[in-house]
Image 1 (cartoon, rainbow, N blue to C red):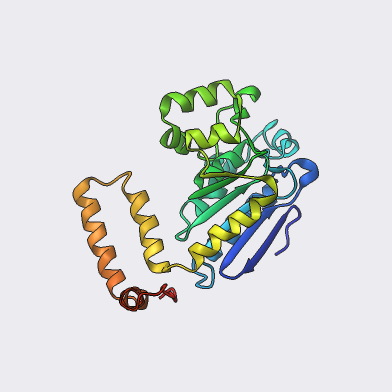
Image 2: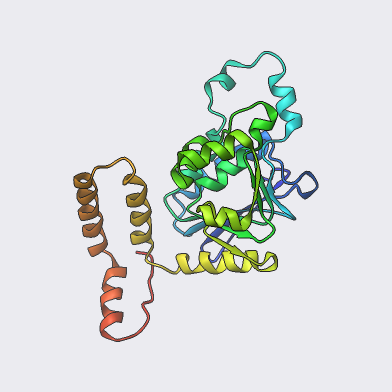
Length: 261
């Protein structure tokens, strides 16, 4: 289903969602958020898709929610179903996507889509990217999962500083803090992103999915529970064709050719 302001492609095992409202700095509408939720949910069980990329057209990733919609939606009585729904409901299937996710950040990252970017496994930033927890300047608190993700990445003290002051930081500072994985020249952003995506897509996808699950489980597991998970996951890997290929390629002194099964 086509939604204005959002494009979707699928090629070479890589699914790409693009916020496409450059004239509005890719501000996201309710329809766009709903479509991101739908696409990410459906792709969970699509075996052809190995990696999910999210990016923005033009000079921005996204400035967050469309303020025109926010003014209309929250200036009067609020419908009960809206009250019950968390503001970040739409990014949950991205955060819990079983396969690797990459946010490609060409420019400004702000508002609720800052949380969406933080929910991805990798964040590749253009040298032109800028980051702001702008909520405080609107009399709001960060949403979209930002109060969950950011302290885990930069620590509570730095997270409080960024959230309470709302200062803009550049791509290099974001890299230093661990907010982004890598900073690249602006013109090379999508080339670098797709090269990473292709490397992941060519990998042993069962092992990759289990690695992702294990890393995120480690935040709530104790050591013994994590060892149990690793044991189960390793036994699953032992049953895959990719494990057999990994051993065979090692013995034959060549690069493995994984099939994802």
